[in-house]
Structures are given as structure tokens and as C-alpha cells.
Amino acid sequence: MTDKTSIKEALVQYGISPSRPRLAILEYLRTHCTHPTADEIFHDLKEAVPTLSLTTVYNTLKLFAEKGLCLSLTINEKQVCYDGHTHPHGHLLCSRCGKVYDIERSEMPMEPSENYICGHRITEVHYYYKGICSKCLPDDMAS
Amino acid sequence: MTDKTSIKEALVQYGISPSRPRLAILEYLRTHCTHPTADEIFHDLKEAVPTLSLTTVYNTLKLFAEKGLCLSLTINEKQVCYDGHTHPHGHLLCSRCGKVYDIERSEMPMEPSENYICGHRITEVHYYYKGICSKCLPDDMAS
DNA sequence: GTGCTTGCAAATCGTTTGCAATAGC
DNA sequence: GCTATTGCAAACGATTTGCAAGCAC
Image 1 (cartoon, rainbow over the protein chains, first blue to last red):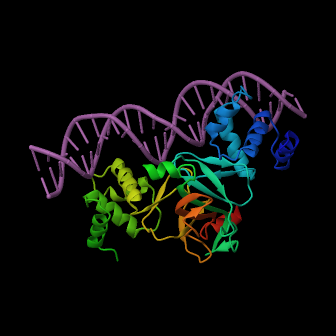
Image 2 (image 1 turned 90 degrees about the vertical axis):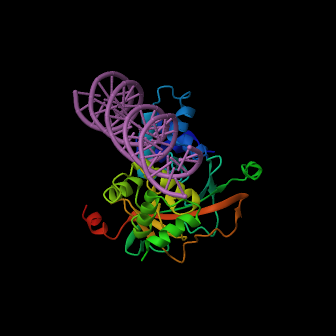
């Protein structure tokens, strides 16, 4: 249960002033595990926040990602999607339906063994699979 | 040393007829470890293959990736880049200069432990870091 | 009223598509 | 000659940018 107060607190804590669109977008991210795109968030929030613009959604997501309030995932070639759950975890992209699933498995090393590898400084670890999701598997067999 | 003959053989082996642009693009991919974009390949090959078009580069790379002759990497938000080395390995994207480096480390599990995970069928494993590359580190410290 | 935030419209740019010209067997 | 391949120009679509209007303290 993510209540409005904690959403606001999170924004303040990350040094972001809690405007109405920002509250709405962060709440959306925290209550959906669908890895939405900017456009999906825009469409879903348009009703509740009628003045919202797609530009604001883009700008806000960019701000959140920079500040570490969300992850931006570039798994899909076409568009960036966002994940409000920032603890280290992996993903699966279904090549058939395009959905992105969270995957948490012990064999996924989501932390680098060292901060520096081959002389490069590591700041983020990304791990994902591509495949066919369980929902699409029957259709995939058929075709 | 990747000779012309083996390039041609590889194309034929993967069921692709060895046209001049295709030979040039595959040779480029095999002799460069820079993870080039379509545009970079186009610019670099334009001189040697003057009739080459950017469209053909895009189409050819797509074809190669589908047939398994190269990997398409969606690490960078802006554009897809390609890797002619298809053995399982990881990457590092430098947030400062944008270059992509190959990373091969024993702790990177580039094969899934099972073909099916959480009911989903796994076909590809992608593992990459984001960070600051060794060349950019001094500049990064300074700024 | 000052500065941050928003939202519209237009621009940008990587990528794809339609289709006619071309090349290779 | 037939078929696959190429390449131009135009379309497309996600994202960014410029800028004026709005809001909050």
C-alpha cells in the first residue's frame, strides 16, 4: 500500500519539489509493475490529471531517472520504459507481446563484484533476458 | 585475420546470398570491435562502396541480427548498435563518451541456468554495465 | 515578483516503408 | 528474363527543444 504521504516524502527526500504531475507520475510508477512507457503513463493519467501533457511526462521521467527515483530501461528497441522499483533486479522482454517482466533470481549478479572493472568505473548493472513469456508460449507453439 | 573467403562462407552458411554490400558490412562488423551504429558503418564504408545507401545498411543489419550473424544491442537509448562477435559476453556503456566496450568476466552468467524461468522461455541473455570508462575517468574526476 | 514548472507546437533524428531501378544468375 | 537486392525519397514515431503562460512562495 503506497499512500500519498509517502509519495510526497519520497520526492522531497530526493530533492524534487512535489508538484501535482510529479506526485501523480511517481504514484503511478510505484503502483504499477508494468514497466510503462511515457506514452502509457500519459494516457492513463490524462483522466485524473486533465491538464497533463506528454512533454511533462517525458521531462518528469527523465528527472526521476537522473535523481535515482526510477530506472529507465532500454530493453525495447522502440521506446524507453520505466520501472519505479529501484532495488536491483533483472527483467524479461517477451519478443512476442513486448511486455517486460521483473525477474529476481539468485544467480543474477545485480551488483558488480568490484566498483572498478578493467579500469572502468561501474555505476549500474543491467541484466535481462529476451524470450517468450508464459502467456504467449501456447500461441507461439501454435504458430 | 578475417579473410574475404571466410566472410563469404559465413554469409552462405547462414543462408544469406553474398552480395557486395553484405560482404562489406559483415567484414566491417568482424574487423571492428567498436559496436558501431548503422550510421557509423554507412559513413565508414561509403568510400569503399560508393553506391551504398543507409537504407541498405539498416536492412542488412536487421537481416544479420535475425539470422544470428550479429547481435543488436539496445544499451544506448538513442540508437541501436551492432556487435559482430556473437559469442556470449557482456558490455559496458560509458555514460560520458557513449562508447561501448566488451566485458568478459567469469562472474557474468551469459547463459541462463535453465531454458525456462518462471514459466517463460529464455532465448537471449543480455548483461551490461553503465559507468565511466577508463579513458574518461580522469576527465570525470576533474569536472 | 521572481523563479520554477508546465504545456503547446515545432523541430529533431533514428529508423522504416513504398516503390522503381538495378544486378546477378 | 526472372527474382532478389538495392537505394532514393518520403513517411513515421519517439523524444527533445524553444518559449510563452501559469503557479507558488
